Image 1 (cartoon, rainbow over the protein chains, first blue to last red):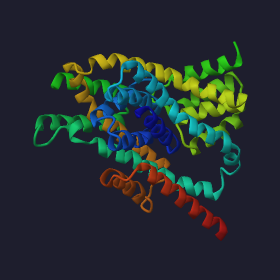
Image 2: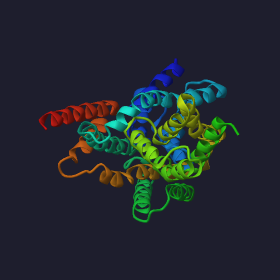
Image 3: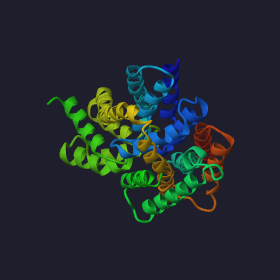
Length: 190
Length: 180
């Protein structure tokens, strides 16, 4: 039953999601692409691209889109996919909400304690590792082409990758502009 | 306008006009909630910021639900969270429905072939800034590297990395407290 599985999976993703949308990409990828095979790597990458270029939190956008596509891929009609998209996005919200209202007073009281500092001192580098892992796993043959079988696509992809990295990191080009530029490059080159 | 409608509208406005999510919303929220609506004091807002940063869940949603909760209890919290989430859900659903009929189009595929490597770069790009906030130095740089290797090469679930880091941090902190 894919609806129940989506609900459980995204509730789990919600409660273990420290460090915002990008860290969540790694969690969604592990569950949805690697474990359950609801989406292919390319579908997932396209979903992230769209989530980055539309307003609102990336995490919510990605969850909505994943809930929709997973159910379409499983062969259900469109209305079921729409319901699933709504359910999936709400699934990531409810557990953190309950946790937050139950522990917020304690957290405010202990926000400067050694234990809290020590926990986050370790969680922050770990979250960074999660995001690195997401990027590494997306550097796949599906997204970049194969160096032997589709050399041209591979070379173009690596160039786009490097230029996007330099563009956003050094020249501070806005991510959405960068995405559009790369899409246009794809239209012209391929 | 009812209080809950006002809560919902305020957060949906913030949610649907902020690109890039999360931290980009903080100054907008502060202006709207503390200065304009005066639902919270500056100090309460900063406290909520700390809680939202240290509890799981999406930052923007955590902020909205906590502000709503502080202002109007559990229902206020739910309304606040939905305020941020609902516009996103609607926009994505519209895009998904439209994209569904175009996705096999050859030009759309070419467009996305160009975008995919860019997405990877966009995920990697904020890592350097995050490394600064996470205070990465030569003593702890092994943590993100080992964690990334475990997940991407050995298929370890990211959830386990989070659990281990949390528990280890707790034990270490507890030990430090006792030593003092």
